[in-house]
Image (spheres, rainbow, N blue to C red):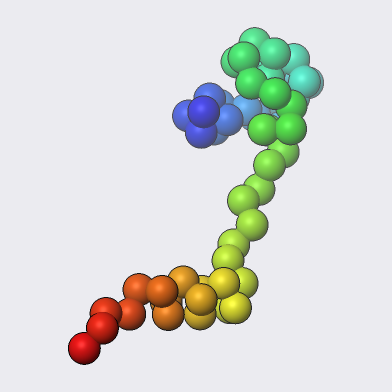
Length: 53
């Protein structure tokens, strides 16, 4: 999916909607930006990986 998403050219004269249709992906996929983990999430993730002594 990310390979096809990378093919979208926002500067092209062909609208993003049409590019998405041609690539077979939804328009929302073209505009999606993954949200990073918060400090709290990272802390919880790190504490779950601690090994017992």
